Amino acid sequence: MISPNLTPSFPSRLPQVGTTIFTVMSALATKHQAINLGQGFPDFPCDRDLIAKVNEAMLADHNQYPPMIGVAELRHGVSQKIQNLYGHHYDPDSEITITAGGTQGILTAILSCVSPGDEVVIIEPAYDSYRPSIELAGGKTIAVSLELVRDQHGHVSSYSIPWNALAKVIHAKTRLLIINTPHNPTGMVWQKADLDRLAKLLKDTSTLVLSDEVYEHMVFDGAHHHSVASHPELAARSFLISSFGKTYHVTGWKVGYVAAPISLTAEFRKVHQFNVFTVNTPMQYGLAAYLFDPSHYLNLPTFYQAKRDFFRAGLEQTQFKLLPTPGTYFQSVDYTALSIPEAKLPEADFCKWLTTEVGVAAIPVSAFYEQATESGVIRFCFAKQEQTLTTALQRLQAL
Ligand code: PMP
Image 1 (spheres, rainbow, N blue to C red):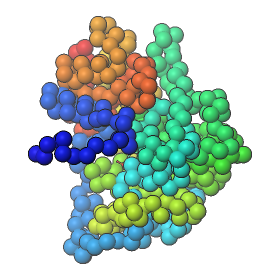
Image 2: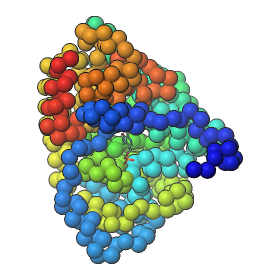
Image 3: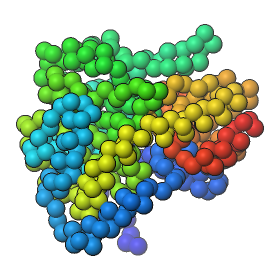
Image 4: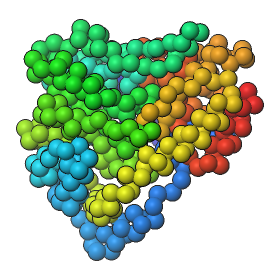
């Protein structure tokens, strides 16, 4: 290895960023052979038919650069899907771009519209890529917190959108507001009335919206996902982000898309072409063929609701207080009511203890805030096989 002294030093672009809690907890889970309900990914295989479709694309020699904006079949499929589900037509040629997962879509959207000094509002707890992406663009992050609703014993029982705080920080020149529904980590989903209220709040501003909807197909109990695409006023100022990784159990493929009005897409593509230029060709063809059958995403709520209900029923046998999970594949719980001394630990320490001593890894919700905010809530991922959930539940029930 070259001596570090020989390498010139330079100021970090992201001085605050270290190793994420997801990496830390996953490494700890591996070391202690804990069941990993921390990081959000399925532990079951994807559909063999999807793999076959990608293989077919490779064998059909779809292995060179695809168009910069994405394979036409996939963009048309996405446009059709959005039209069917949310009633808005995005032109597949000028308003839909295929990205290397949701994360690249988020970074590229931010880089394309945020100039140094611009204010960007986020709502914490927030997905961890938002803040560093804003910083890389030179923007200023303004964070407001979801309001915590507490029961009579002081335990967190749900969250609500901080409308008053949002109204205070958003002004005519706020460049961008980032929203996320269904929401990681809380599982909260926005209602139609929330979109109406947001549209009203932004009416006299030039604020754009980045709507992170990567969990759009995981909304339960017969409810619907309310996309910015379903709201013409919001659609006109929004980047809509989604990811095939979540929907088709292929988080490692890193393919997603961004739908946005023509002027936003034009700026988005200027950055995209020098950011990744384009995305894995055979995966795009495979996904396009698979997307053709809507049952794959239409069945997803039933599939994940069964897992959610199974996991929640098991957690009911513990002293954890369950928060509602109307969407996503995350279940949050308040652990402060457990009658063990560790219930007094801060969230990150509690999660480390749970991983090393109990053998179940979880993620502290405090990690989704810039200034660690202790609310006594941790997040489990239930995108797991029944056997995995059963073993984790047995360990949690022994607490
Ligand atoms: N947004 C949220 C809220 C997420 O939870 C994730 C994945 N953890 C992403 C975006 C990124 O999706 P992808 O893996 O497609 O980059």
